[in-house]
Length: 277
Image (cartoon, rainbow, N blue to C red; front, side):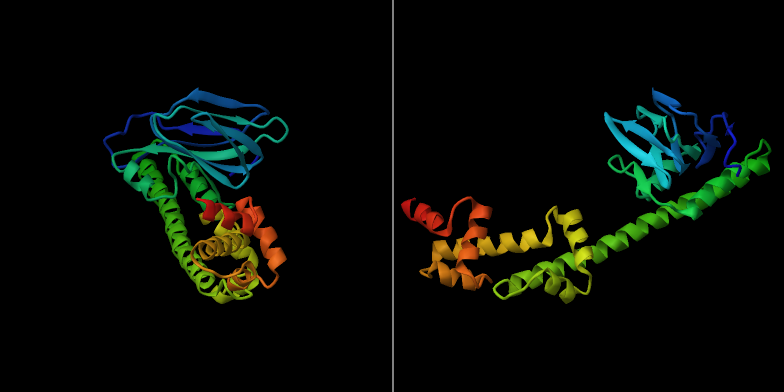
């Protein structure tokens, strides 16, 4: 595929009754600010950004798209996209539809809330290139394009399987991390010991917690300990010093500072509030 040429090829014949068919395919080196839309398509359209950058807008949300990204336009959805002024993108694309198109797209990672995949995947680019290079007006060309399209979609379905496997592994990591905290919070554990217990790095543990729980592992551990301390303040006769030790803090003064930071009041004030109620 020529990286510096402006090319496009369209299949304009209506093919809604086929299981799947290529409607258009092409490659374009966009000029600065080149845009399309707002408008809608009557078919699925997938762009892979080869180089440069651009903006993609769908449902009043604008996404910054760059080289290595694959973005989707769903049928009958108003969108617009525009090349950046300083570093306009070059992309290749395929448009398709058919009676099986939705079912196949449902097997991929794309969803209404997931319109862009950051891939940097040479195999995806190669698959799109092969669809483009198979274009022609003969029946054999059409069948060849459809075959190449199925191969391209099979790669996207494979990505979804990888996402599911990653999510399953991540779920195990989170479950084991939370179990470790639940069983060991009263000891001198830290993020390193949690990560070591489940066999991943500190940075990986951090990313897992942020992505799936929306909180860092250190903040989760702190809140878990402080919530447990609140329960002891309400339901036991232990001193604040003993409660601090019971939830993993050797220094009562440090415990009090952390408690106030999380709850907004000191442990003694919290206890006083509970007693007054």
